[in-house]
Length: 367
Image (cartoon, one colour):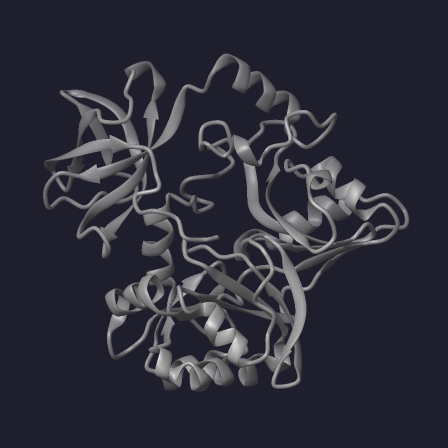
């Protein structure tokens, strides 16, 4: 993995006995020694976990009219938030309506927007925005300038408050603060379904901030958590992962992400295609699957009603909270399936019975 990029916290992960895997061109911790995925998942659901998600992209869009420009490109409506707030949004392809990436936009000011795309898609999102930017607006890839540390779980606010960081701001908003004198942005965002925060900090301060979180949180049972637990947590919430549940071939309408689209805006990339698909109704739609037995759905597995294939699994895992297999699947709307319908998934040649459900699989605690 010598050609993969490393987080500024890589040495700390190695010291903790992390098992590494490639994510979007970065070598990141999958899980840690001393408990693994189940212990890390349960820490986030019950106490507090800390994740290094520095592989996520970072980009700035600055200059007079930056918000207006971004709003004309990305699908979300930035006019619905004000300075100090964040918004989940989508970068869609203008010709097809497919999803180039899903990302978070942070509105610092009318002339200053900070974006956090997915790791593998950062360069492409920046390229598209830079190509469309008018004179006076600068789009800059800041991927390796900052680290991101996610602090997630019921005790996340307690941990950050001990360190003097701001914690009282509302969901999908952010404040600037410090930990140990190191400046950072504390965002009330996350990908776990729990009350939590994401800390954006300059890369050279990341180690000191990580150390402070781990040391101060010892009596709160804080646990470093890897990206495997991040996946089980987000799947329990039904949160989509780009490249699986959203992609250039899976539109926001199909993926039930239409809530993140500013349908009344006069312009955004992919608007005409998406409006047409919304009006006509998608040929397939994302649903949840809950296993009735021991089967665990995995991406790519076929979904059946009788001998008719009616869809394909896009994400799937064992739910540590529910103690059963769960997944997301694109199901043909023509099959007429709804919540409560019974289907079967081909799990390595064996039909596993599952029920169609509408996520989340566990209650959300983000607020």
